[in-house]
Length: 142
Image 1 (tube, one colour):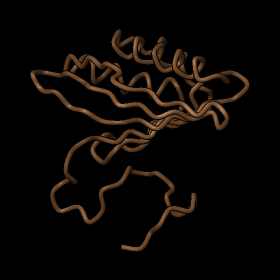
Image 2 (cartoon, helix red, strand yellow; image 1 turned 180 degrees about the vertical axis):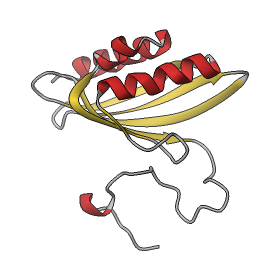
Image 3 (cartoon, one colour; image 1 turned 45 degrees about the vertical axis):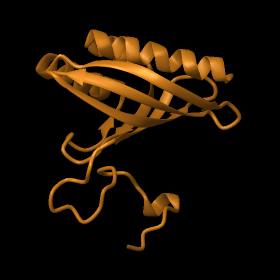
Image 4 (cartoon, rainbow, N blue to C red; image 1 turned 135 degrees about the horizontal axis):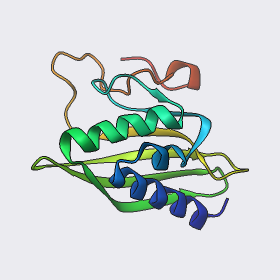
């Protein structure tokens, strides 16, 4: 996939998110896709339909609207990272997403969402809920 292919896929996904249309969001994802998020979002969403439902709930509940601020692609690895802004119910939040793509279809296989905010009160770790850090070789020492 070329960097323009990854960039186009991310822009299509964000456009679908802003509609709150479950099926439009789901169309951006490979069958076995996973969307990891920080604690408080109900654990990882698995599959395009489930991811679309989470996004649709956010749009309905908070009138969320996302915009893409920066995109960096690594086409040789089928990965990209973006910075984004979301406006919801009078609040602005910023964050980043790590994307992985299926090289054959160009569909998103994984998103890791990181918010620009402090860890949850009382949390001993600030990391994505359900993400297999140890299995993927991340440092686990405190």
